[in-house]
Length: 305
Image (cartoon, rainbow, N blue to C red; front, side, top):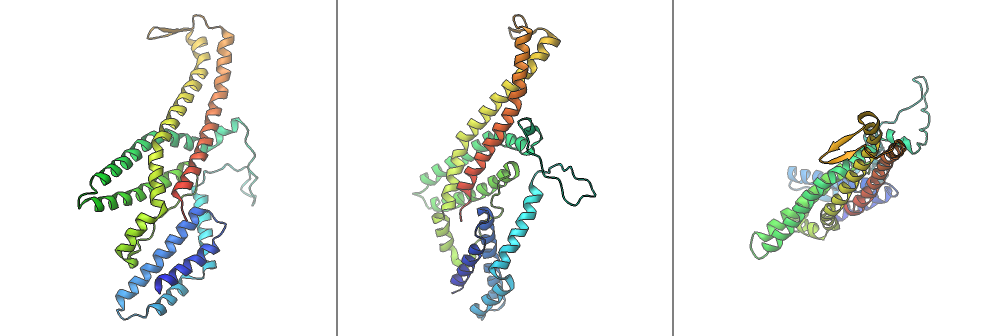
């Protein structure tokens, strides 16, 4: 009866949060369920002969109506999101109560976009995280299959799938911090009141487990692609920018038998420098775009309600 009552309350809370960010809804539902079940378990422990229906009614009344709870979660999430968002320079004076609207940035305005640099950092780190995630996932899957015939196989598989959930949560925090995409901020409730069988069933039947595992495997090819592309573009951009300096300041540079400066005209060098001036912001724009695409993929696979 208590499970049905809690599930009904969560359904009402989910309906009250309709239209909100999916990650917010997931966090709110998990947080509410964890609180309700933990409080009910605490009262059961303190009062062995407790009337569960009455106790749960009191707990729900103290927790609040779904509409009120939904409004509180919206307000809190807005505060946290504002705190995590990159600071924007304001042209308003201290005496003004309303800040001037942020002007639309042009092509070179990307240099003032902090999210472009954090996205670039994420793309560079994706190779390392992708190697770790892929190695962890493939090793875990291989050992789980290999140990399936032994007694230790099932416990190992359970621990491995639990670790996948934790890695997905950690990746979500990295995605939100560097890419600015709202991701889940807490783990699912322990469901201790439902018993170990229900928890195991939930681990294997919850789509989040398998979509998270898919995400970990995909991160290796994505990480290789991101890292290679970004390093190549940065190298070309910086080389083009350095061409005028090398030509007009050092005149000739020799590196391992390769000589710059002998047959390059001044016009060619100036053109190369201008291309470099365009290539650097273009690289930042591409990093911003790839960061958004990666954030969308992370939300599709790691956020499930």
